[in-house]
Length: 312
Image (cartoon, rainbow, N blue to C red; front, side, top):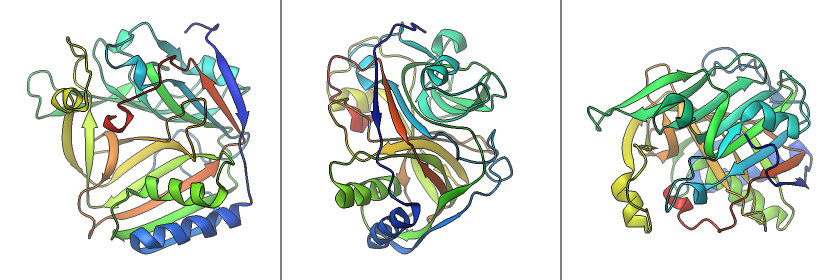
């Protein structure tokens, strides 16, 4: 990773958790038949069904974004390599920081283009996953452990000390509206707090139902110019719960061209990739734990504003 990449920072607005819980619950109840959001002591996220590398989401919370979709389309910038350990140091985190989130896999190490689910301790345990399209049968996909603390082209992560403490517990079931659960949460906060920039990260478990997921295939040999180009290149699947989704969302793009939401998922049964929404709204059940970031780190922002983000 080029340590001289441009870095921009911003403070994030952090209203009381109890207030945020009320806002989220009201918004989710418009989109789900059942929804509750409460402030709780974070459960041990190292245990089933989450199996994360740290117990909690508290302590020096940071939301970070490196690169972006403009590094992938219309043509890939394979030289854009980000070392997550270095990102954490730039963010002011000590070794052993807990990092979770979503990005493009380290194809320079793996040898193939893939999705990345980041779940690691800096300078320590790495339980991250990559998900790739099966080269012999594109109707299939392969989830594998990722031993490299790196990614390519784009990355959205939440960093913390991994400590226990108070967090937001989100429960929702039976989706009745057209918004995905993260979109609903994000838009609820945006409507309430307006231009005050907020950023959250955490884990979302789809406990029951199925979901729309994409997995990037090998890099396209021709430029991806339009949404149709991306649709024809991308591989889409319906995957089954339980799915453990990790990622971040922010309440506005700002002049930093922020990606407003990005979640990737993994599972014990081999399903994983980029999470969109559930495909079985009547059966969908979610359990999530989230915390707010205190500050934002934006690194290597592409000079060209992203245009096809909704495809990714």
